Image (cartoon, rainbow, N blue to C red; front, side, top):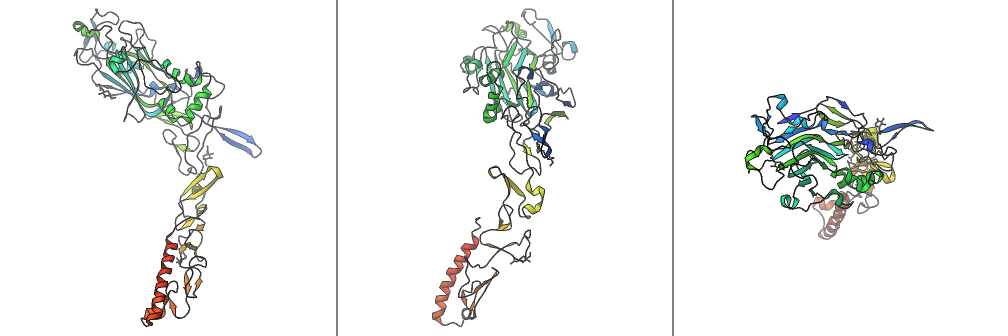
Length: 492
Ligand SMILES: *[C@@H]1O[C@H](CO)[C@@H](O)[C@H](O)[C@H]1NC(C)=O
Ligand SMILES: *[C@@H]1O[C@H](CO)[C@@H](O)[C@H](O)[C@H]1NC(C)=O
Ligand SMILES: *[C@@H]1O[C@H](CO)[C@@H](O)[C@H](O)[C@H]1NC(C)=O
């Protein structure tokens, strides 16, 4: 069952999110992709690395529950009051709005009293495990910028795994394990994010911090993004330059904070005691009132605007890039390989714009012998790649080794370079023949063959045995050399 809860049809993110306000504002906003600057040559565009504002990403997700019928109330059932396990006459009824607890209530406006929440069916089938997967999908890569916060209305689960996907739900990796007893539940030593360091920041840990039973007051579970950022940016995230520098250079680190989907795997509800009270199984269920996910569209530092159109997020790409994540160069802008923008140097970063392909400027640049060009950073120049028709050179304007310029063809002619027969350096005409326009040996009387290697009498079958042998041996050797020379399509 897919429950779409897309509130807006087309949302432009131009608001300043609450998350960004925690960050220092002097540098590193990356909120413009280009500005016009005035130079001696007039107005020109200056391009910068840029990214969309961080925002509340729960507005753009789809939620899916497994098992699909795990939400309480169909058929109606009673459950025990939160905080009072012996008052068991509360009712969940999916067909009565005031008594229903559908999944979208995890993402609605909070601050209402009483709070609204999703609730699962109760643990009627104990000891069969009560397990629920809540999958949140964005169909878009997003970068997390703040803690994921899950607020329970019930007690926090005894066992839970937060998982993430980076490939639209095809594969999943654990993000964090949560348990009252990590060793017992997952055979892992309990750890807190504060036990990690810059070097172990990518470690997947099991934490007992958020699973303290049924009756405690705290209802919140975090996945700590900011504590992880702080290993690079300092305790109050003052040195974001250092964090951005790391994100720029360490793909694994960047990927760690990047997701397309999240999955909350609820594995065992809060029991608060060692034994489950089998007389009152209506005490045990999951209920979640709120899930917060803050982040931004991943646009590879090539866009500040992410649009939500047709229930789909996509970057409005600048810098002549394209794709949902601005992950490639536009057609005709493939003059050098695509690369993401860079946060460095602070504060403007580097745009790494896509540059026009030379073949799009005009075919005569490669004389029609190549459709691909490559930008050579070192030489700041564009060269034709894979010149065809036996040509070579920056503009495919030269002939390959073993091929010669056809004097009667234009530079853009397919026949401009022809396999030849002879020249005065490598392939000599034999027996006193002379090379004519590289295409023909003009043989003296009495000789014939491509390189004048044959005696005419041999062709006619009228030679004396003596002269015939010698000429034949020399002829085959020359032909071999000729073949070797012709077949080596090497570049100079
Ligand atoms: C939840 O998802 C995991 C994979 O992430 C799967 O192995 C498990 O069977 C699912 N559980 C339920 C109740 O659907
Ligand atoms: C993208 O291409 C257009 C058209 O050639 C050009 O005007 C614009 O400046 C380019 N933008 C960037 C960032 O290179
Ligand atoms: C040289 O080019 C002309 C013009 O395309 C062509 O007609 C001729 O066949 C070419 N010569 C050879 C030897 O291929």
